[in-house]
Length: 386
Image 1 (tube, one colour):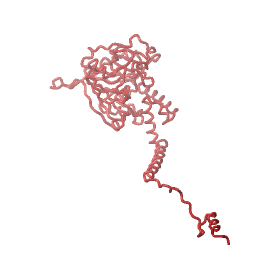
Image 2 (cartoon, helix red, strand yellow; image 1 turned 90 degrees about the horizontal axis):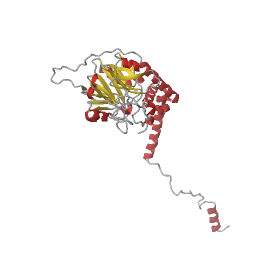
Image 3 (cartoon, helix red, strand yellow; image 1 turned 60 degrees about the vertical axis):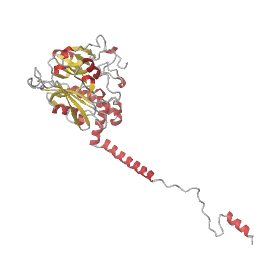
Image 4 (cartoon, helix red, strand yellow; image 1 turned 90 degrees about the vertical axis):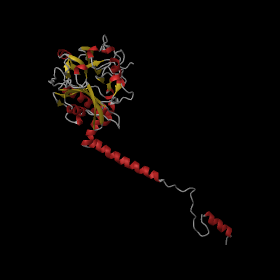
């Protein structure tokens, strides 16, 4: 019989103890249990993923989702990030959408306007102790937007004002303070390379006091304009320069589309209102009063913006018989006496430098508006140089 030591050694070498049971090998540290917060995080992730999948399905595969998708794309098209819309509707659809805009805007300017206004706009009862003011401002609110409506009771008190220095545009607040105006709003569009334009190169026509200050039409025979003739009647739609001169145009800029003509709205519904954005729109009532609608946007919690259909409906409710779009977006601004800004412009840098503004004066004939583009060719103007 072998000695006990040898037996013990053999047992040990076989990994067994004297009872014949193999001992367990203990790990140096047990696996830690995940904390409760981690479980919550996983649940939140799973929930978020599920919701995202469902939202994407609604966004791309349902009629209501498609309507919202195109409205969102339209809203981007009106911003300085137009190219982002291709990630929502595709590059081909983006090109088609922009081309559709151009065609529809042209079509909306074709019908000839036949509205008339009194030869002497109503200035209220002259016997009243407190005659009605020339201007008034009221706030307007709707689904997701906040804005202001400026009413000018005598359209002949409005002048198109331009910057007083060459090389860059001018803020409307500066124009108002410099000229002593009662109020002012932004007017026409301008060349804006990389959305850093200096505001000095207008698009299309600029007409002030019946004179052409700037003509960037090139070979185009006609253009969409928004303005006022010498009798105070608002003109909006597609006209040639000769037609405008024959009609006695006084103040005008190029912009589109016209959204109301002969008392009827041209945009059938909100989904065709060209997206949600800050808006500047000009209209006129039968009594001759001019309406400037300014709606803020791109500011969640305050005002996201409005469609052109929203603007159209607001102006129809206030009696407009004609109305047309002005340059909105980050250019939208409403200024009162002493250059006080009433609204909240959406530009991160604040109020923009612009080439034109519609300003209201007690005595517009006393205001001198020099033509800073005299002698300049559009091709000679660098829109991006400050």
